[in-house]
Amino acid sequence: MTTSSETTTSLKAGTWALDTAHSSVAFTIRHLGISKVRGGFTKFETEFVVDESGAAQLGATIHLDSFDTGNADRDAHIRTADFLDVANRPTLTFRATEPVQVGESFEVEGEATLGGVTKPVTLDVEWGGVQEFGATGDRHAGFSATGTIKRTDFGVGGLLPGMLSDKVNIELEIQLIEPK
Image 1 (spheres, rainbow, N blue to C red):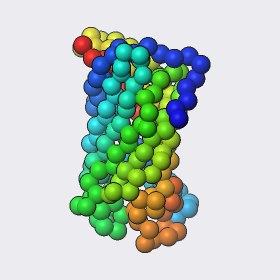
Image 2 (spheres, rainbow, N blue to C red):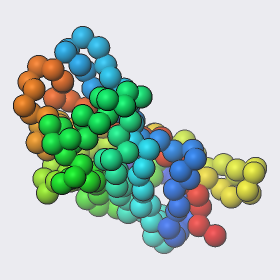
Image 3 (cartoon, rainbow, N blue to C red):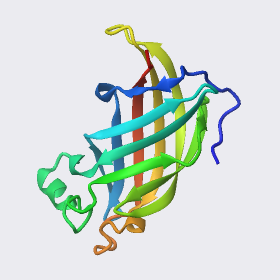
Image 4 (tube, helix red, strand yellow):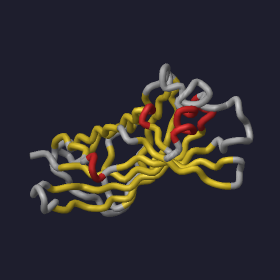
């Protein structure tokens, strides 16, 4: 089920393109229970298709080999079979389970899939609005979304209990370009 605030927003029907220069996928995870490690993924895609009723089908794909915490040695280790195992699990996908009605703030219930394991995930989304981008004249829509996954639900890094929190907080800042 998807819930929305009282105010809904009208978006142009069609496929909205991702503005990669103004979008990001970030995460935080606790290390040893005492501090947070922050990072992100530099390669990802979105799917955002608005139908004539104004409801949007949405999804995203994150390429796990683009994992980046700013520490090359740590990042190389995280990509191995000890953690993400990008050789066998190259992507993390998210798909909303039903069309979304965009409002000022809303929840999106969906399913995340990693390495053949699919689990329910809820994203809390804040609508940023639509604004013309002066450099191109295109209209952009903006969204901020947050959610949490349990890494051990997907078999990620379960060999090192206590080193990393089971909870991984995901933060998305997404700008989409209105269809012509």
